[in-house]
Length: 163
Length: 163
DNA sequence: GACCATAATTTCAAGCATGAAATTTCAAGC
DNA sequence: GCTTGAAATTTCATGCTTGAAATTATGGTC
Image (cartoon, rainbow over all chains, first blue to last red; front, side, top):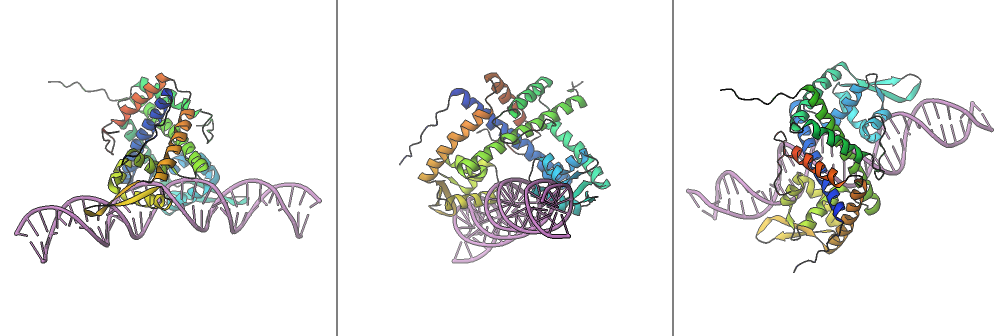
């Protein structure tokens, strides 16, 4: 017996946009998987850890936990665990905030700073390698299109102008 | 004999490509977060579940667990849990394979097929809305660029020609 | 000084994701 | 019929992720 499959009727342009999204998702996943794999093999670490280190590297004076989770756009509880493990590895320090016993400042240790510097360099190399076939013009076009997508009012999460 | 070497990309180009990757990642995450949110609010489900249903919708005759995890490019163990929950919800059926007690065939139930059809239609609408500012030309360019990225030999995971 | 809304953070339960180890079954070869 | 290596799947430990609830501290207000 054959199951009758109701065709989903979508206007032509809509279908085209859906195709763009699917390719975008696939390409992103491929690149991300490669980055994860490289981080694992070459530095025995993970992408979330890398992201936390990157944020702290950028804000040299440290961030409060809530600032960190906002910067990474992840939940508060999420950051707690990752930072815990980074502290255990000696890459991150927790510093009490004078005058507010609720908050803690989180920042890179010397070791964390050195470690991330090496990772960031390798990371830039991997990405440049993966995207090596993109011309300057391709890059300009891509950035333009991606920014158009990011400005859509239909997006749930808000984007701050900062990044 | 002299071999004409491709000129080494200057650091400037590398930086440009890194920027493309960062925007790509950000845009993808924004769209994905919106899709997840919409799936949660409107259908009380998740993206991984949606992905499994989509794969099974496409292969009407069902898939073996290993074929399913291969199609989705996720680990075997991962699919086990998601399918378990979908079976519990009555959306998916597990069918023993005649002649091989090791394998099981997994396919949509009637309810699963109907449910996914509604989700897929909504999903297409969300994506079309989010990408509504992309012109036909933008779409063509985007697809071209994204396929170039997907063809990079520096990628870890393999891409099968099928999709 | 007690009260209380709010802020900063952690804890928690559930689900997703991986790679590795364990389990069960199959299919030859002997 | 046994053995044995490979195949299909599950189980497991670990970690990431979320949203919601709980915890603790702050800064007023009365």
